[in-house]
Picture 1 (tube, rainbow, N blue to C red):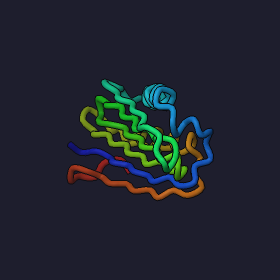
Picture 2 (picture 1 turned 90 degrees about the vertical axis):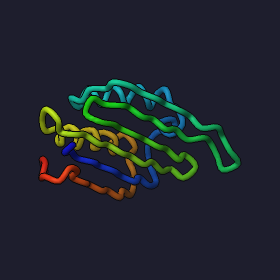
Picture 3 (picture 1 turned 30 degrees about the vertical axis):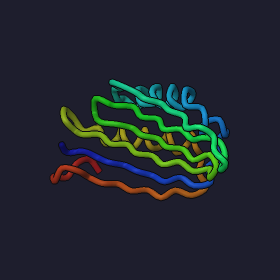
Picture 4 (picture 1 turned 45 degrees about the vertical axis):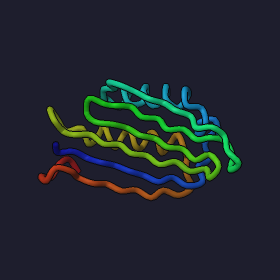
Length: 128
């Protein structure tokens, strides 16, 4: 149960706008990046919401990991993204892999402002 939970709220993202509205493109990138970081995808769901009076519909991208999960939610009308990366450390310390995944996501979306949160879960200290 011990693990690392990273979240980030991204504001004024300077990425190509397609990353905020193209569920298939974002989903494929997420799965590949998860694997590049040494994590194991075991399931996935990518959904684009319909356009509204506020602008184009955003995307929810979820990758289930053997280690736990990655969730990305986009708000293209605001140029905003929320990120959620959680890894449990069953069978090994996956904290560095979680951080590498978060770093790759931040590089992709290129926000002007980020609010980070880091939670060590499960009681005992895990990788810093």
